[in-house]
Image (cartoon, rainbow, N blue to C red; front, side, top):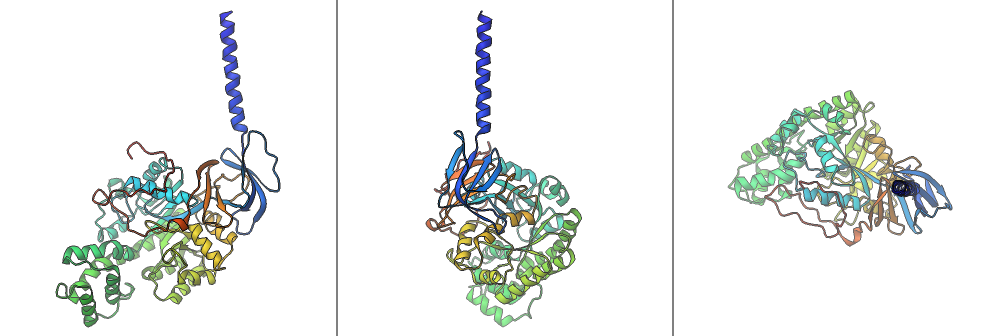
Length: 501
């Protein structure tokens, strides 16, 4: 009798557990009454619905969907539903070294950075600090819900070029011994960022090195003026003008401390030398991209424009080559930049621009011209630290009638997936059988993110509000010698933290 009682109780518990599993499995999330931008660049479904079951979208339609009692229903009246944003170009996303071989930034700052992107509607993001190993990217991925992938730039030639600027203090044996082929096999999805290094030297190294040498703080604008007078576009240095350089030294407070000849030697060592070494890097990465069938992301700027054109002529028909930040501020002549971007487009390049806004409020002149000429394929961030939301940027594009919402959403979703297929497989569209990465936006102000779903799970409610918090462009902070990590009070996103974070 006692045995029978135990059997009956056990059976009852089993039935309850099985029933619970069945109920959970049958539960669906229904988005109804939504304006759906599918991400293909042309399709809008008004008063549409999306059914999510598990991690997949199972149905997309127009009109009413008959939900069941157990379904979670989200009424999207007055809202816009889009695919999760796929950002294919950003730095400082992992616990590994920077692209310049320096120590990683604080882990808390990495999480803060990833939080910010997710709050702005990004569900997949690509780390372009190509000296990070795939293993380091995977460790970071375990600490955060965002879908994180990495590039590779594991080349001795590239490291040699960087060492002339920073010395690469953040590189360990595993970074130096890694190869592009090996990293691609371990999960890297592209080669990049193939960097030219002039901008990095000017931004992060030359002002500090001059201060250490002279005790004088030289502004970035003053450094740029000296670089222009001494090296020009670096590929074709101008005739040495001692009198002009003397005047620039005086305005920078360096007169009597450094001679024109000394500043010329200094600039050649810290800018010209790594530039020349990178020339071979561009050639070799093109060959490797074709050999391994990998997309590549190349730094496009005034100093590297000729190299990018050569890459396109040789490999453009065989490799997906992404010309990064075609809106680069290194081009003082905007029409020159537009013409070169036009040439790249004809050769088959995938042209991207950054979501950088002038003073965080308006589109830059070069951005406007590139959109007017229809030369832009994709949009990314690449701001190194605080950045403008891509949706806020798209909002400005639409206000200026430079594109449509459908076209712009494709530039940050399925268009990116087409360019780098392994970055976000089975993502980038609101379509049945696609992974349910979805973002719900305010219909009146698309930059306001109301909800983020990632892999069928609602990760975030009440995301970013760009008009309420203009980002501050500031340099990243390295190592224990920098400031303590500044916590963003808006960042309340729960994350899975590593034990050693």
